[in-house]
Image (cartoon, rainbow, N blue to C red):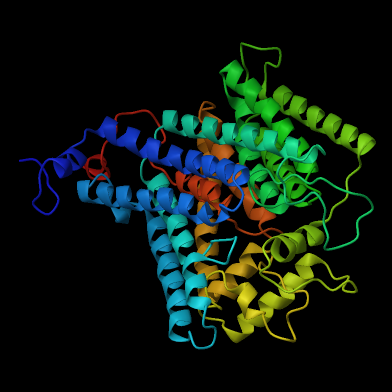
Amino acid sequence: MPKTIFGTTEKSNFILNMNKSTVRKWVAGILCACVIVPLLGGIFITAVPGTSALLGAFLYATGFSCILFYIVLLLRKDIRIGDYPCAYLIFGLAALAFASYYRVVLNSEEYPDAVNTALLGENGRYEGLLALLAYFGIFLLASAVMSRRSVKIIFDILVGAGIVQGVVAVMQHIPWGFPSDFRKLPALILLKDVHLSSGLSDSPIFYGSFLTVVTGIAAAGAMYEKNIIRARVYGISAVFFFMTGLFTSSVIPLIGIGSVFVILTVIEFTAGKSGTAFEEGALKSSRKRLAAMLIGIAAVLGLVLAFQGIWLRDKAIAYTDCFYRLYITGGPSPVNYDSLWKIGAERSFMMIKDHPILGTGPDLMAKYQMSDELIIDSIDRSYNEYLYIAATRGIPSLAVYVALLGASLVRLFRDVREFASDREKWFRPAFLAAVTAYSVQAFFSASAVTVAPFFWLLLGMSWSKFTDDKPYTSRKKENQ
């Protein structure tokens, strides 16, 4: 007898009784939407002034769709939570996020408008409780089911999204009036007028985080993909991403993209004696392809240094973003020469001391600082994602997040051995490079709804147990 949901028929029958191939297509389609919908939303928000309030809506649409379909997979018994230990960590993060939000609700008299902020996020950021749940939903669906073909499709879409944002970044850098909030940085005096690139990520710093993720995919694909057209597109894209990163005046793309190439170089020289050999193309080995990308990056760096120079202005970017652009913090002091990260750490440790268990509440760093003694030099992010989690959601949340990240990295390092014996599974080093590099740059950057969904997507995919093209079977049948 066909399965039904709560005794209903027709639509529920269709959902519960789809064949395995259809299930895989649905999952791949929803995960592709997790990339495409925010990209289209970013284009719309950039093109139509005054629509930034919709930023969170695009995330909720995809994130909560992932949660619903994950529940469908559980009802169909295609997956069992016990087979995915990462799910318990995600549920722990969700429970702690709810508890942090509920603490704000119980103490709403302290900050009257904090409840809405903790739920929806600060104005212009929108990374409150709902956004966190959307991240967790994307992770869960990505970890549940995946095929090798689906992985490559999602990789292609991610690299394509990077190219689109890169084109926007180039146009923002050219002084011809393309929409950008970072044509000048009023927070601090600069040597000259600047035109900083932020792509569709809302900030040059956040754009650097996005470049870290997509470069991890592009560089790995360029090195190991047998399809010569895809490999060339990926390789050129990796160099292009680095070039647009230099247009941000932020150290983040240098740290992130630099980490990507360090990781891939280590993998290349430890996962095999001679690398991967190819029959097509002028560059017939993965090491030659790696060398070609590094030469391209060196050439781009030399040209940019020669024609415009590079000035790193992360502190000015942060204050321009949160004070001059969003008007959600106090202004910068012209005599405070402390680094952005020192200021962020000091404020974070103050909050951790006051609220060590559940933090100040999701996305409530800015409101917590709105007092006479703290209004100067206040920022709405720690610009250290780990400190920010502890400050806003508590030390237990940080511990669970680090546990999830640590378990993911251990799994990824172990999976590189699988890549050593089957070089077509280059998505293994791609996951490792993107996730690890993002985790490194997170010490100096911040999570944002314009970037974090892509990280959680890749982190979830790295846990997938169905990353080959064999017929889809449930974990229950596989264990029999």
